[in-house]
Each structure stands twice: as structure tokens, then as C-alpha cells.
Image (tube, rainbow, N blue to C red; front, side, top):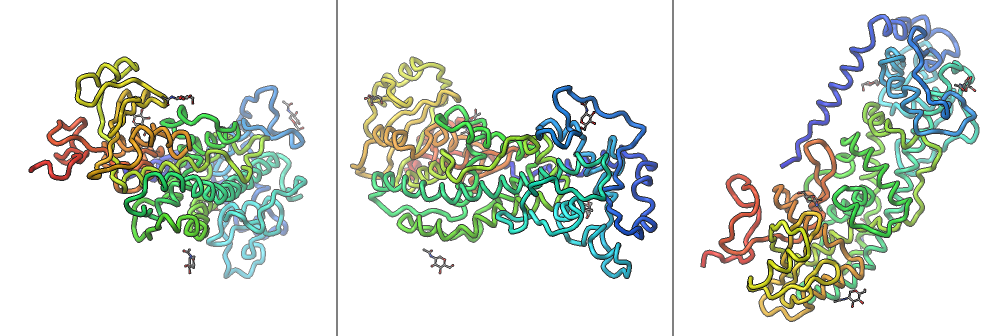
Length: 506
Ligand SMILES: *[C@@H]1O[C@H](CO)[C@@H](O)[C@H](O)[C@H]1NC(C)=O
Ligand SMILES: *[C@@H]1O[C@H](CO)[C@@H](O)[C@H](O)[C@H]1NC(C)=O
Ligand SMILES: *[C@@H]1O[C@H](CO)[C@@H](O)[C@H](O)[C@H]1NC(C)=O
Ligand SMILES: *[C@@H]1O[C@H](CO)[C@@H](O)[C@H](O)[C@H]1NC(C)=O
Ligand SMILES: *[C@@H]1O[C@H](CO)[C@@H](O)[C@H](O)[C@H]1NC(C)=O
């Protein structure tokens, strides 16, 4: 199991290192004079955060001028301006904004110390405070999607109290706060549109595979598979497979994937682990139930946004590779092609599973089509002639799918007694033709998920390094024949793969 995470200790170590790097002198320079400063009227903590004069400016590339407020935004500027240090402290920036900005004392009779003009209110999201101090007042709050007061000011609306020397830094951080909020807001809006598409598309599949019993879905799994959309497209295990994505979907997927990798706690806030208390949704009610669950979907996205806007180290990790600092907008249109691939793949695998379909692995590795064709001859499974979509054309009761990236092949069979429905080969062809699911994720995903011991738990998991593992999006059972040797390492002395027949002992 890989559920436990080392993120929090890692983040803590990172913070300690940063703090240790700021000398006591630097810290006292920015923090030691609270009392006298707070009594100055019009004092703005941001104004006092000055670059340490005795340290050289970072070298700049000639083409990019990050301190020129009239120049276009540039994705290199987060690094060039040292904005991570500006916020958290370290390097040129001494103690940093977090440590040098006081928390208001609401009991104080001194108006400068209690009303939030010069300090952050207790419990206030740091971004809300930052925007107020940057703009010299007003109410901006970007800690929710579709926020009422989170609109990037059209002009450079920085407070007149701000020192010139830090205007570029403040401007860039402000821009990042708005860009992150906008990204998640437009992502949520695109997801709500994608969900309708997926429900409609999948109806054809249900008609084809579901004569036996009405498939039902776990609502939390449905919402997870929906909201993982972009991150799924960015996962290394599927990037090669999904063709026909717009360049926008590709770059947005990349941006989100990098960010989540840098700040895995955001992903954990988005996709809670476990299946607790989730209601079951009948296929017939799918569209209505999903449509009815937009509040739950919004809550998942808001968990991530709130974390970013209230936890500065997480925010810094999320944005510091610079993607939200550039001139290009990351606003997603309301329709993003392919956003529902994860949802469809999950629903397809579930419909297959509940109607008796299973997959059995052949480890190979099969490197070429010939390898696969040769291995099937005489094995009792009938000859294989490789057809479209890496599925052997000759399968009737069962079909063989070859996954080129992993070199494994899978026998896809229906285990229901007297099954007389669609043939295995046809079903896989229809699956590809109708974009119901990505075969590679369906088969390799289920194999990987089972091998890792995660099958049947959460459908989104995390690797030891915090990266996202989307293998369990496929809930198609992968099983081995009675008496077969376990093809992978045992888990707790047990083969993680079940056996195709439930009565192997008889
Ligand atoms: C960058 O722009 C600022 C403000 O316009 C200017 O003072 C500075 O000289 C510029 N730096 C370079 C290297 O061009
Ligand atoms: C600085 O960070 C600490 C710990 O995360 C937090 O409690 C405090 O409120 C932050 N200060 C500001 C001004 O955001
Ligand atoms: C499954 O794991 C293999 C590595 O063993 C990896 O190459 C492949 O991309 C994974 N596929 C999925 C869908 O998780
Ligand atoms: C939608 O939600 C409302 C309120 O929770 C509930 O009463 C209603 O039955 C739900 N509709 C469907 C189709 O689930
Ligand atoms: C493979 O796909 C092509 C083009 O889509 C189609 O014309 C052909 O009939 C397919 N072959 C088989 C065996 O399904």
C-alpha cells in the first residue's frame, strides 16, 4: 500500500531549512520593531519588506525584465524575483512576508493593530490578507471557486504605500493568486459540462453490455473519476495513448500535473482516500444523480483551493515552477475535449466488471506483434492475427489485447454461464470506436492496481513520492486461471490476483 505520505515531514524540513537560512540579523531587521511601526499611520507591512541591500540581485536573462511593471508577464519571473523566498523567507528576502506581517490583535485599542489595515486577521486566509495589503484596502477573497470578490484589477491596483522596490514582486504574487483561482474555477465549470457528455456517451455501452443486471456506481468514485479529468490526461501512463487532445487540454493537463507533483497535499485535498459512506448510483439515474452532485464536486475542488489559499508553503510549491506567472491565460473554456476520459474509463470498467467480464494477464514480455501471434498458437486459445487496436481478430468467447508499453497481453473473457451477448472482440472494438474507454488503462491499469494491492479501494492513489497513480481508475477484475503461478510478488503471502473461477478447489 502506498497510501501513507511523507509530504508533511518533507514540507516541514523545507521550512526549517528556509528559516535557518535567514540569519537572526535579517530576521530582526524585518520583525523586531513591531511596536513602533504599528503606530505609524498608513504603515503597510508590504512596504517594509525590502530586499536585503547587501546581497546581489539575481542574474537576469536579457530578454526578460521582471521588474518592469509595464512589461508582459513572464513565467520565469517567479524564480527570477525569488518570490518563494519573498513569501516564506530566505535568500535575498530575509524573514519573508509571512514572518514579517503581524497577526492583528483584535483586543487592541490601537486601530493600526486591530482592524486588518496593517495586519492579517486571525484565521484569515493569507491570500485574502495579502491582496488587501497589496491593494491598500478593499475586500478580495479568492479562497473559493466562483468567488464573488476575486477579480484581478484591470489596472495595476497596488497600494500607493507600497515601496517601489517591491512592486514587481507584489504584482506577480497577486497575479498568481488570481490565476490559480481562475484555473480551478474554470476547471470546475468545464467538469460540470463534461459530466453530461460522459453520461450520454456511456449509455450506448450500457445498452451493449448490460442485459444482466443494472450496473450501479459508487458516487464518490464517480465524482473522483470526473474531477481527476485533467490530471488523468497528464499522467505519464496514458499520455501516449490519448490522441486528438487539443493543445489547450494538453498544456492545461501538463500544468496541473506539474503543480500536483510539486504540491501533493493539494491532490490529497481534492481526492480523499477511501469509500466511506458513499451512496450507490443506479445506471438509470446516472445523469440526474451526477447533475445533482455538483455541490459535492464543488466541495472537492474547494478543498484544494482553500488549502492553497490558506497554506502558504503549499501555494508556493504549487506555483513555483512558474506556470501561473506567464502571460498566457490558463482559463479553460467550458468544453475541454477529453476531460471525461477518466470518468468514461471508470464507468466502462465497472459496467464490464458487473456483467462478468474479466481480464487474465500473459506476462510476456511481448515486444512485437509476432511475439504475441506466436505465443497464442497451440496454446488452446486459437490462433491470433493481430487486428485493429491491438486486439487479435480471431477471438470469439474471449479476445486478446496486447499492451505495447508494458509488453503484456490480456485475455478478455466473459465468465457468465451461457453468455450469448456481444463477442469479446466486438466489444473491445466498439469500446475504442465509441470512446468509451482507453484499452491500455482498462487492462494495464487494472493489472497495476491489483499488483499494488489497491484494487477495490480508492480509485485515485498516490505513489511513495506523492505523484498521482491513476491505475485504479480501471475496476475491471484481473484474475489468473486456477492453479496458475502468481505472476507478481505476493502481498502478505497472498497472490494479489484472484482466480478466474471461484471454485478452483473443486
Ligand atoms: C527593467 O525595468 C526597470 C523598470 O522599467 C528598469 O529600471 C531596469 O533598468 C530594467 N532592467 C533591465 C536590465 O533592462
Ligand atoms: C505565517 O505562517 C504561520 C504558519 O503557517 C501562520 O500561522 C501565520 O498565520 C502566517 N502569517 C501570515 C501573516 O500569513
Ligand atoms: C502500469 O505500470 C507500468 C510499469 O510497470 C507502466 O509502464 C504503465 O504505464 C502503467 N500503466 C497504467 C495504466 O497504470
Ligand atoms: C437531488 O438532491 C435532492 C436534495 O438532496 C434530493 O431530494 C433528490 O432526490 C435528488 N435527486 C436525485 C435524482 O437524486
Ligand atoms: C480496422 O479499421 C479499419 C479502419 O477503421 C476498417 O476499415 C477495418 O475493417 C478494420 N478491421 C477489422 C478487422 O475490424
